[in-house]
Length: 95
Image (tube, rainbow, N blue to C red; front, side):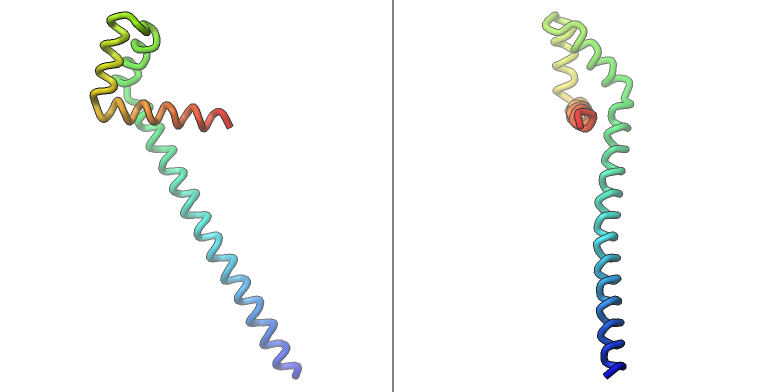
């Protein structure tokens, strides 16, 4: 009877430890994904050409220079990625 009780205790503990390790693994993957997405956002935001266009766009707003910067930013994939990264960065800092 004593051996059966010890066996049941060992099985219960090992199962709980295994389940705990599996949940940590999922958390690690999510954390790694979040870190890589933050790094990619930071890399996109380091683009000097896009920074210049964004500065012209916000500084000159509705003038011809501002509209031309806006058009150049919207028409490229880099510009669209920069815009999305700016939005994500602003959302993350608002927390």
